[in-house]
Image (cartoon, rainbow, N blue to C red; front, side, top):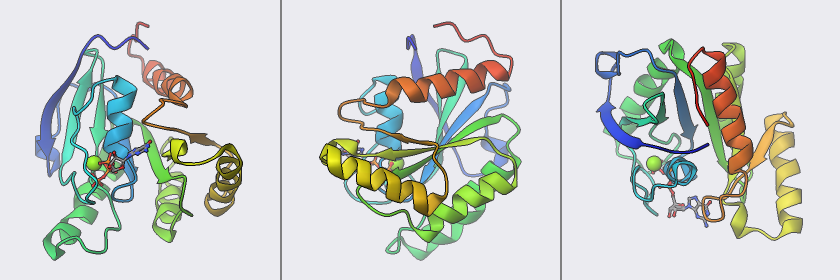
Length: 199
Ligand code: GTP
Ligand code: MG
């Protein structure tokens, strides 16, 4: 996928702030600090486009990034951060859930886990929630560069067992391994929606 342009468009907390141009959207979801924003940046090859941080809770709003003038990447705040301020916790659920449940333009959710750690109950709930609603999703286990190839294999099968699916892409925002597979999935979902995606 050739990236001709990638721009931050806006942040939103509720539907009246979402873009209204009908372009397809790909959402990045997962626990706080798993590497959602880093994945988004590395797919686009633009460092620092979505803000990243080693402290959980960096992304607190729904952020829309327009890619090649054709589709949006949507960076969502992370869930399950125990030490998040009460106000943040109170708003994450309704804000992100409303987006995921109602957004007609959403063509693919990328559910991100940290390959080093066993997925949590919340990750499983998220996957089952998407499945039950017939929302297309793909699981990406990131930070693969932090593991040896033996560990990588073992952790991939553990992630696969816990989340009860074989459809998992191992990824690294550092080496970009897994990017081609992910782009294939993204472009096919966008094309399916009827948009013209030029390579
Ligand atoms: P919140 O917005 O706070 O929910 O976090 P996030 O899921 O967007 O995570 P973010 O992209 O900010 O990354 C969290 C930390 O993990 C940062 O220090 C990143 O540099 C690091 N990180 C993310 N992806 C990778 C990866 O593939 N490999 C390595 N080595 N580090 C990564
Ligand atoms: Mg983030």
